[in-house]
Image 1: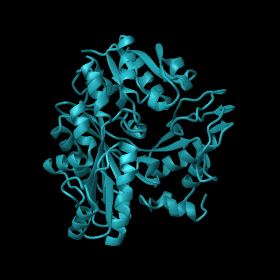
Image 2: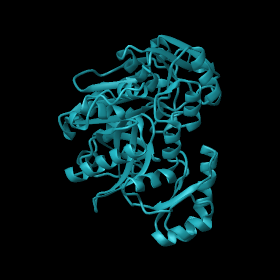
Image 3: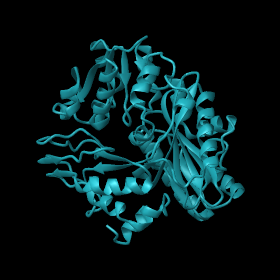
Length: 451
C-alpha cells in the first residue's frame, strides 16, 4: 500500500523533519498536537492537524488508544512515531497495525524483540555479532547478579533489560558495590519502564560509543556507515559525528557489515541504529543495543551520504523495496551535530523554557539547522528540552570542527538560556580537536571548569 495520508504522532523538531520528508514524497500530513502545542511550528506546516489531549504527555503523546483513534478519525493510512514517546513501544505499533494502518517502523514483534536488551543480545549472538560478556538472560535477583559478576569479572555494569536513555544503569567495582547498586538499578528501571528486569555485563572502561545507521525493507538491509557519539553527559549524547575517525577501514567494514547481518536476521523494516562499544586499545567492538526508530543524530549521516533517511523509511514502510543497494551508498567528508537544549549550562543544566524573542540562524554551504522555533514561540515546560540541532558538513573532521565553531558564532536564540556556550567551548577544545575523548570524558571536563 502506498502511503498517501501520514499521521505524525510526535512533536518538536522531529515532527517538522517528518513533514518536510513527506511533502517531498507528495504525501499529505496530519499533525497530532497536545493542548500545549497548538502553536507549534509543525502544526502550522502540516496539511491538517488534530488535538490529541492535554499538555501532559501521558494524556496526549503517550496515550496509545487516543493517538490511534485520532489517526483513524483523520482517515490516515500510516502513522510515523518519530523518536521518543511511543516510537519504541511494541504495544503502540501493534495497535496501529491492528487498526489497519501502516506503522512507519519495524513490526511490533521486531520492536519487542530488539527493544529488550537481553533478547537483542541473543539475536546479535545468533547473527554472529560480538557482544559484551555478560548474563545469558534476565537477572531477577541480586544473588544472580553477583554470581554472573564472579564469572565475568569486575567491574560490571548493571543495566535495565527494557528501555534506554541511560536509566537503570549502575557500575560496580566490587561485590559489595554490586549488592548496593543492583536494587537501585532495579527500582529505577521499574519506575521508568514498568519493568524491573536487569542484566549484567562487563564494564569497558573509557570506551568509544560507535553506532551504525541501517535501513531495511523486511528482506534486505543496507548500512549508511557509522557515527561516533562518545561525548555524552549522564549517558545522553551531546556532540555527534559521522564518521568515526578512531576506526581503521577494516574495523569500520566489520562493524557496518555486522549491523547489516543483524538487521537482516530479524527481518528489519524501516530505519534503525545498532549501537556498539569500541575498545580503542584492542580494536574490539561489542553490540550493546538496537534503537528501532529514527535517531536524533540521523542528520549527520544524511550529510555524508546525501540520502534522506526519513523519506527512505517512509517508502519501505509503505511496502516499497529499498531504493539503494549497498554499493550505491557512498560517503563524502565529515559531519558534526550538536544538540541544542533549552537549559542553562552554567546552572547545572537547569531546564529553561520560555519565549523565543529573537532567532538568527547561520546559513552557508554545509550548514543545517533542524528546529521547531520562530520568534514569539513559547517553548512549553512539559517535554524534553531539545529545541534544535546544528549540523555542519566539512571536507574532513578539522574542517567540520572549524565550520561548527563559525556556525555557532552565527546562531542566536534570544529570550531563553541554551547550551550554545557548551558547544562553543567543545568546538575550541584541544581534546575534541585531537579526538582524545571517550564516553566518560565530558563530565570530568565540566567538573574541571572548562565551560
